[in-house]
Length: 501
Image (cartoon, rainbow, N blue to C red):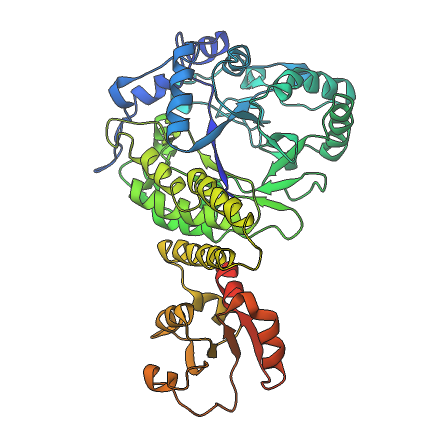
């Protein structure tokens, strides 16, 4: 399996009447980005898109260009923030609606329902979303503190919401998991009727030819009907770290590597399928000013190292996709899109992560080789050669990622081992374990001089933790033989390598 990257996508880069009314004529996300200011020494603001490309999402050419760049750099698709409020009120919906109409743009996509009330920053509304502290003006009336109210209603509103989403779900580009259209819900725990809503949506989906809707709840702890859970990053990591404060305005500062380590340490949900989210960078000071948060020491190299590890973790958990925050959150400093400082560096790093032994091309080549071998005699030497090649290929993949076989052994309490078989695989295994905290105390091989070649004892040890069998294609017969003579675990090198991935 190859995990696919979905980038979060903000549809705020075009003019709408509401923004003109609330924040000023011509306001878009670019308004805040252009006027970002350095708040302390070394603070890198403003962020400037490459070639000053302050694009308009109403322009088809913009989306065409984004789709091409994303595909060239291994981004599978975009997760559009979707806004649906009380009584079906929508906002910032035009980019997704345009994409639906522009069917020739090859851009896989899905939705994340950003289900928050929009309110003024100075209001007392809990967990509300305010776009830009620096641009709002105090309303004359307290009732004007609420800009858009998030309520969920019952079946009639749920049906209207589903019917709006249905044409998107039916689009061939819409991302599906297990054949179901994917829907992420940002504040899943805030929907008190979420279980009933999901059941109702699933019934409507089945009536329309789907097996249901695949719901991922971000930070979900309450609802048992979701198909998967995900922690929203880097916000979840921030909660576990103590920020530094710097400059006259005392902006909150976090270290990039420290945030990434918290993300990697995030636990797999024991009850639901887990989906992980990484992040590019973070600096929301253009929106928040002195109340802002900045992540420092952000580099493409560090991003690549940690996002690669998170991709590995996703694969190990059986997740089909991984999310990255974000494609174009310029006002919060989270963007993969090229800028004047880094160019395409972050996108290039992601492309390189996708071009490992597990990329699409390599998988196709492996499949072609295997198909050729399958046409041979099943007991022939060619099939055996292919299986050894496959295992060595996996081993090389581990080594390229800086992983070591001793990690799996130590985790399972194995620190003293015997190697059975001193062919090529046995020699490589001995070399890898040499100098590690796993001790090879004895080698079993038909070559009676193996102890002299390796410097290992000729005397069989009284006790060991495990015997590692390197002729893995004959493992069952060898293991049966060894169990009659040794009181320890017997494992194959195939298990050792594959479980270490």
